[in-house]
Amino acid sequence: MQDIPYLLSRLTPLAILDIVLVTIIFYALLSVIRGTQADQLVRGILILLLAAVVIGYFFQLTIFNWLLVSSLPALLLAVPVIFQPEIRRALEQLGRTGSLVTHPLTHPFSSFQPSDSSSADKVINTIIEACIRLSERRHGALMVIERSTGLEEYVQTGAELDAELTSDLLAQVFYPRTPLHDGAVIIRGPRLVAARVLLPLSDSARLDPDVGTRHRAAVGITEQSDGLSVVVSEESGAISIAVNGRLLRNLTTERLRSLLQTQLASQRFLAPWRPVRAA
Image (tube, rainbow, N blue to C red; front, side, top):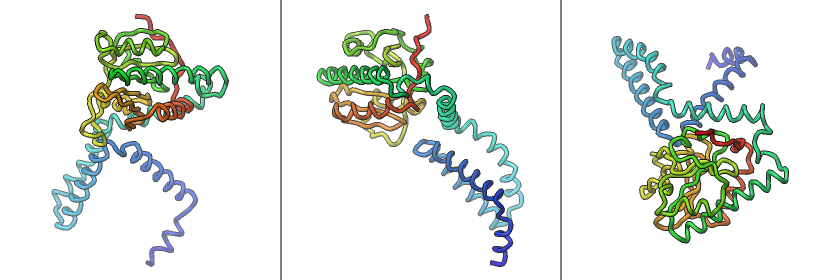
């Protein structure tokens, strides 16, 4: 208790700023790993370190304490390797924020100009119309809408089309007997840029055990980027949407339209439309 006045006397505005900055950094790091496998990994590391410190301090184990202290630098070097996906995602989020500050007009849906609004509505109506037709026929489908994070590395894994986006084209692509139906399509603005695209599968523990490969791929791409995925189940015809690593299932067309309009109206997510590179 006698140290409290001394500590308060050292609490200068600069010290308060220092504490706030450190708190913000730790909060941001915890927010990035929350709900991922890294969350459990961090808990395991903290429990292990806490147990080691308590044991070493309580029993006064000199060599054990020396080993613990000597291992900390190696652990710090291992952090970028262990948490590489989470660090990459955080830097991508920071990059998307910076691009909005420097180039706010490069996002076609970011403003409320009539031409941009009509273009967004056309894309949304096309996707919804295709989902209705595919759902009625029980044709499985996976559509990924590219936003501010470029998906060119995934485009290269499939068949590049660079065709005008229409519901007829989507229905044809996902017809079971066509060579392009297996995999995802990537939509970039008003263009369908690629089909038969391979996507990363999510291994999130939040997903239901009955979720299949198509839905895990839909979630996986939204964990690696800010892309938006729309899925039609081949078994039930149910329509789902994946965004930010979360899957919303069994959507009505009205709910799907509302979610698409909400997401595509946000300038944080949409990338400038650009053509696919020539082969």
